[in-house]
Image (cartoon, rainbow, N blue to C red; front, side, top):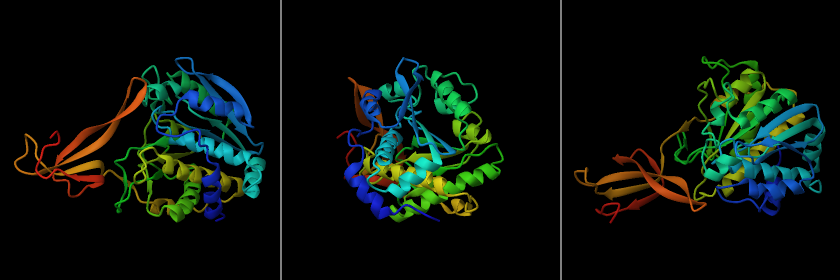
Length: 359
């Protein structure tokens, strides 16, 4: 399997990633000036529920059609950052010219950065009408869902990249490692049959996983392929548009997801490059060797704690949550579990030495 050279892409990224985007909360106002500077074709696709522009970026002129969208959940911005890293890469023809030429000549990319700009402002999954766009593929009640579906129907992509974030609670099954990147080849119906379309999707994921295992071994997981009748990926896959979900997760001490975005970019670039050079999708079986995601992490485990309910010392498992206060993103601790947490992992462990959490 032909792969991009990790060393070369590491060097390029260190010097050239899109440094104007950083942090968890990425808004339309952050990407708007970058879109205006793009060397690629930019079209106003439409407007969000609250009237914020949504753009469609076209790259390349090849016969293989690929649709990519990010931030259909407003609070999942890592894919947006990685997408703008990809834009910079494909515009920089002074380096990695073989990869870029292959992509631009063989593929046509349509990219929708930030499908849900209203949710980005409120930092919620849902749009301004409280619709989860990733569960709106059948009802299509959301303005943004219809914009995406119109692009799908008119562009008729062979492959789709659906970019999401996942919470810090996920680990790679069998390892005390957070699931930094997780993949999914969505099911087309409830039996989860491995159809031709799914095997093609899996083969692309195999290529992406092979590269990432060299960079962050045992930090890559496989998301559950439970069939969701109203989900975007499941329905697009069922319609014959092979859909690859990339779930950007946690990397140690990377709560701003600046390290994760790099590996999100690596995965996306490798997947697109693989599509630009291959006609053989038979190598898919090792998709099933990617470990499942598990849910064994807390952001903090407080050990040797006392609570009003506990008889003696206990553990307190905390996950971080976020809210918007005075138009700023604020992180706070939310207690998820109290009791013996010896079988769980922690991104941070704090010994309270017999005190309560509030002392």
